[in-house]
Image (cartoon, rainbow, N blue to C red; front, side):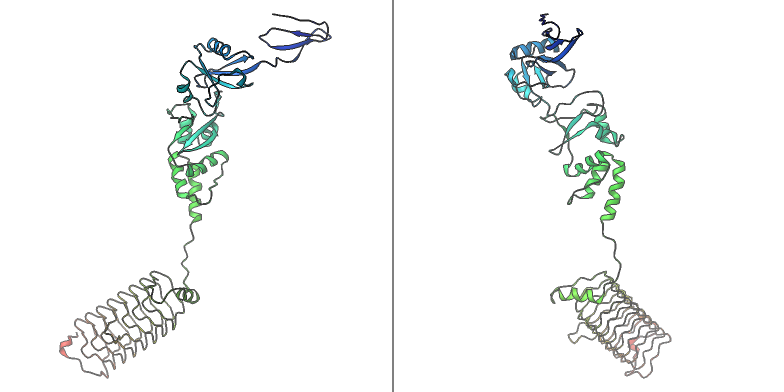
Length: 428
């Protein structure tokens, strides 16, 4: 040890190993006056492993001196030294105080690939930093973030026991996870602060699938609720006349309008041009369709119960299996001069009032017209085979050439018939 004194209050330089300067106080004690400015304290690891490191003092000497010291401290024949980014250091002047360095006896080109991206201090706790490569995107977080929030999750099991799952790393040292980074980011943020925050444009269903994959049970509940709240509420309210007219005006007259299954219950659609519109299975119950033009429209399986269609144009209409029970169809025109016949096969027309309607050639096969009023209707050439006409008022009707085979006319009224029924029409 070299020692230099200058009396009371002087400066004493102790060993080169301590590299510290002291002065002697007035009571004779040593007082630290600073560290040797030429000394740098660095941490050495073997081959970039970040395990069992050694803290050493480095002076302004040479790289060979540093390698000799590293060989002694780490028990290897050190030939190369690198920084924590994998860069090869060949000049002692490039080393800074508190640097983390890696040494090896291998080839510099080969060792460069083994350097980790971020130094992870191994303190034995779960607060050390690590980097994840999720589908090509890098995320930096702490081990405690992945472990503490959901201790039973897959992420927790992957990182609670260091390398317990044999996690693979890329060339930069980041842990590889083959999942979508877009859906992983909300999960990581949830583990950080416990709040579900999803950026605009990110599909919640995708985040939900990731949460299920990683076993983040508490997040699954939040996501399912968020998905439910994000869906528009089912609107069963009927469409108003104003809304439908706006729709009609915005649509070319030649385009096919699809109104299948829509709810028009109680709407006022009187006097509107509704030609060739598809109302299949639509709810038109209680609607006002007075003098509406429904020529060629499709009302198959539609609900027209209690609706009013007085004076409506129903040329060539398709009303197969529709429900028009209790509806009013007084003075309707079903007769198409072009020969296209209206089809009401299997329709429920119980109690309807069709008085004075033009129904030449209409198809009412197996329809139900029990207690219906068909007074003064034109039913020439109509198909009424298998039709239920029980207690139906057919007085004043023209049934010339109508097919009544197998129809039920029990209690039906045939007074003031314009043409007599023939046996060939086979009524029962």
